[in-house]
Length: 214
Image 1: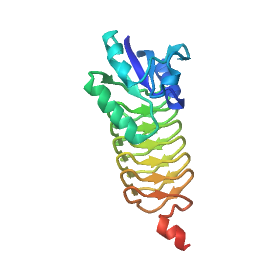
Image 2: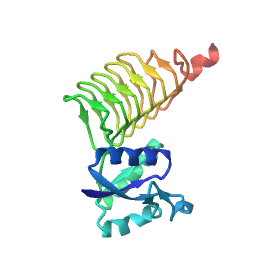
Image 3: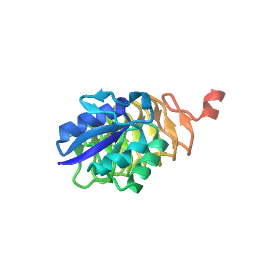
Image 4: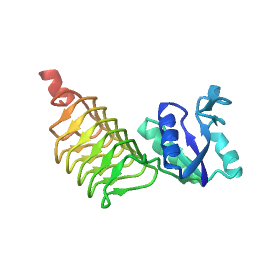
């Protein structure tokens, strides 16, 4: 069984550790975190060994894989790239209760939470997170580093741009596009396309200029 590290000792890191335990394909031997005050602590008996600079030491000890459990999409992608450059294999925590269609495509370094669903002909790019109970319906395209939060629902044919975020419990109707680095607020219902970099909220979700007029 390959040994791995998890970068990020917060809540998302704990979820990743739980999923890796459930998968029983990798053995997590260390956490890393930018907060050096955590060094020496343990999370479910897994020690926090330091920050990113400790990765080389862990590789010398035989650790071969890594997962980056950071909620910030940009930071997750950046640190994953740095760990790859150091020679680590990027691994994916995929919960055994998640449902992934045989004709869906899930690329490397993707977290898929408990009871999430990835439906037929959907594509999930690298570094994305599909959280607990989220639904990614048929023919969705989920961009690199995107985050679909718990219980979010993406209907068929939705396109989610790179490093975009769909908040907890939000819904997107069929065929809509969410731009790169855009954010859909918690509980929002998206009925129109969302441009790059924009945050929308409400039911129905409104662009900022429309919300201010109304």
